[in-house]
Image (cartoon, rainbow, N blue to C red; front, top):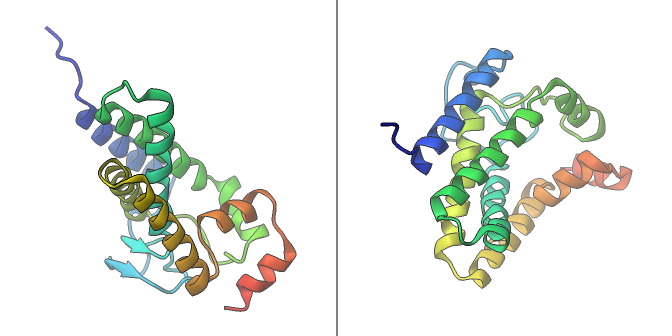
Length: 186
């Protein structure tokens, strides 16, 4: 008899398949520098998006908040575990697209990310873990607290590194020269 898959097994499988695919297409497993840091805080650096966490980790936590909210609206009758599996699938799909040659080149062309050559696989996995953390927090916190955290993360990263989820998406889809100049003045 075939047992039904649990959402946890599906989530782990999605993450492992994503990591395997990224390795298969030639993404670096870890930073070319040869070591792994828990935190890398220098944005304009060849090591950005290469370690476990960085200034873009809050944007992945926000992804979890947003996915929780969207799935609550359209699939609230589904178990929390299966909604997390869907959110993980969407996050991993984004990570695969984000690490495609076309999107990497787009970032390099229209944003200030001139030294961006894609995320390391370990960074991608931790970005997915950050999304899972955000999803879990959104399930536990009141809506006002989740919204406050989104504002805090966005304003904080805009203040500190002149970037964040909203600016990242805007500059990827519709780059504005005045924002690029403001970001370059870090």
